[in-house]
Length: 537
Image (cartoon, rainbow, N blue to C red; front, side):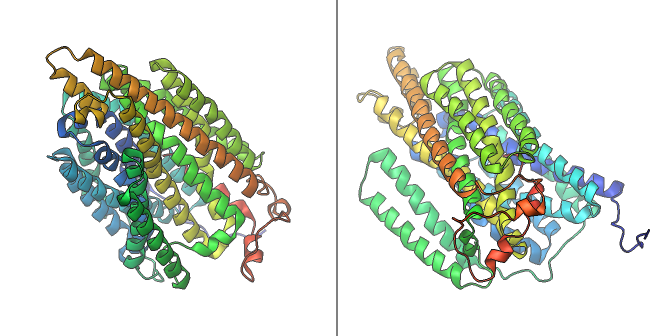
């Protein structure tokens, strides 16, 4: 029997590392908590700032688009300047942007502040996981630390509505943005004492042009979708679509020429990778549109206070946590395609219930079913993308998976939110004040200024918003069905996560062609997917 030398034995983490982990978990929980509190605050900021329907959608989803657009470049930047330094810079930026959002005097300023929050979030979240992997060399301790990282995501999701509801019951809508200040200030204060610095000596070159091209490709397409939903097809929408497609072509050509591209498009030659990315993109699109609308429904339609609405959102958070815990157990015994498809079919029951009924209890229960069913995508999506890529491309695959995830969240609000807004405008009486036809909050405010009690306008606006939510649920259900078809087509050959090497190398005759030598790399055992670190929102 041989014994390990000290140099072969992984160093076990001590008190300093565990204290450092506690510091890192604070911003992790904040990232998910920040989503729920904004949605609860939407009716209040709408009444105060009076944004148009399109401006309101940009307020909510610009965060996701900027996060997705800068995530990969932040990872490269962290490798070059240091992960701890990037975490500190991102945390400081988050504090500044939080104050700007809290005291925004108009919709345009709030949109800009949310954009800065998205860039700061892209700097913070990947840095935390990278530092955890560097701090905990012992495999068992690292697994425990990553599990705590995942748990922090779920804790933030559950705590966000309660904290936000309590703040909104006593303070103005801007207070929900300030919860990031007491979270980030301790990170800034103790980061140098408790967190190690880490740089990659072989880090790739920063390509800011690729980031610009990515955003120039995505944002005009999103603007076009919103314009068509709001005003119907017109010249501005056509120009936006044309510009987006043109920049997409330029972006793709540039990525194919770069030695270290912003997005590794060659990975899409692997069928499993493509399937995992599409599942992340479309699955999150299906979820986030209705998830964004339900808090507004609970407050502006059902008349619940912010705190009550936050409590009614807890079943949804519990559904996500339960689905996230069950998924790894199933994925060790059942092929991931069946786990993902089964979850999506469960979510269809929730979308159907939301589309066919209304009321606080049915809507809250339907959201819980939806989040339980979509949870497997959140847990398995990035892991499957990494597991299907050649070992030397694992980092690029993980970054691309996270980008697809964040882009799907933003698209959910952009697409289904635009559809819901269009249905709402069609349901409000044509003789109502112009601003009342933009948002429900504006309609409630306009009704309060009418000589009569405005009951007819309030009733019509609430019914129109409910119809918009139901239509959005229907659209989301269609996204879920399309995702099922793609998953069963592209991921059916992927074996269970815990399958042995022989099963891991199973291939189907319909596997798409790859570059010379890529087939051998793609046949690499997919056991790497067992590190399912993307377990939460």
